[in-house]
Image 1 (cartoon, rainbow, N blue to C red):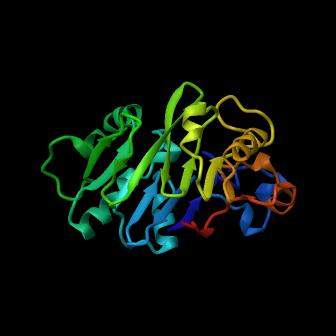
Image 2 (tube, rainbow, N blue to C red):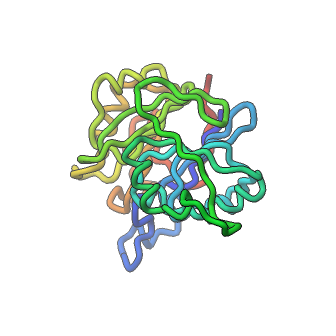
Length: 258
């Protein structure tokens, strides 16, 4: 299984518009972050997308993605679902609706905000999708043929989902995870978790909180995503992290050991 980081930045991305800080002025490619999204390529050649933000079109073109089998949504904030309209080319080339999986809160928000996708219509070319609500704690089989374990977390007052697929786990935009959900992460090889900045935040894990969860789970390797320019320069921050923890960056590809 291979994980492709399509975007690793927070809602404003990095560089931030009109910001003149050292990170936003950096020429280092590791300091350039589109909005957070990831692509999982399975051993059978299936593609599973996690989140579809406003940079989705650019990310698909940049990574030369030619097919998508399933989309997993962590939550329905715009930086995670703002690219939904651009599933249309995949509808056309694959000749079918896109299969999307999420919790109840995300399903209701998506069906409200993108109502034209789901309403009866006679207009060719509109996006087409099937929504699948993940309601319980049991693994679900997605259209890509992979068993996915939902990991429940909180993004301040909003329930969000992380996902475990085999020995890979991916969590973003969380600031609280119950112990029983952390137990679902045990035994993973690769853990991806959000770390917005160094200072504590009201709705996202900060660096120290993310490192605490990584220590509890004890994966072989962990990557920090959904980072803001407040985290600091990649070259400096990377040196401060534990040996098995890394700042994720756009276009990073990692192999998940089975």
